[in-house]
Length: 122
Image (cartoon, rainbow, N blue to C red):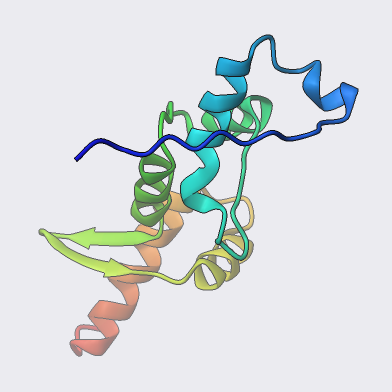
């Protein structure tokens, strides 16, 4: 069955219309964002914001899924293949307590110390 084509006419302010060089570019933009029209709080990141995130995280992102996956990895603790997810608030509090110590070394020290205490080795 052939897809029905619907023609819509939309009046745009000239400052918006000037951003699109052709009707096909308007069509492409609408097709790109149409799946999200009913979302309550869609998050759109500009190229400049994406580049800033890439600098901060030292990684390139092509999709929102890649960004989410990387953020999840940042909030995980992995010991011998066993992963523990840490809340972002907890990580923030831990980082504030590391003070001048390298955070990775601080976290290694704290985790080892508490596990040794829990196991009765301290």
